[in-house]
Length: 181
Image 1: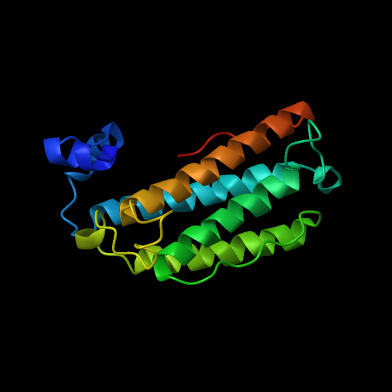
Image 2: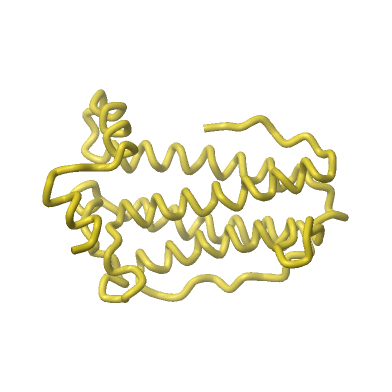
């Protein structure tokens, strides 16, 4: 039996869900979790752009070691992930990742993938949030994930690559923007 099924069967939920539920208990909105997620996502995206814009364009190809992604690639990859999660929710293909060597191209790609993800989040309902009723529900990779899981995967993926980029900033002696939540 999978971990998620075991937890459901004994009535356990993640600490994140419990903490979020306590925070959102004050709200009377039928889509309070989705509203909270959308608000946090918007702040996360603004912060991501601040981190990206902090690095001078001449260092977009900077890689602390040869085997890891460049600074620019961290952001095209982050945005491609956002597009993939949107594609999972709607059941089609993601927007292809561009080259990571031009700040304007990367920002435009981040804007496109953000817009498509936000549309998919706006189309969700609280009632279906904990179901796996996404378009790829039979896909071996996505089948075990609920809609809420997919949103949290997107958030986590963005935070992961943004944090890596912050290390790159520090290695280039660029002070990263103040963290926002």
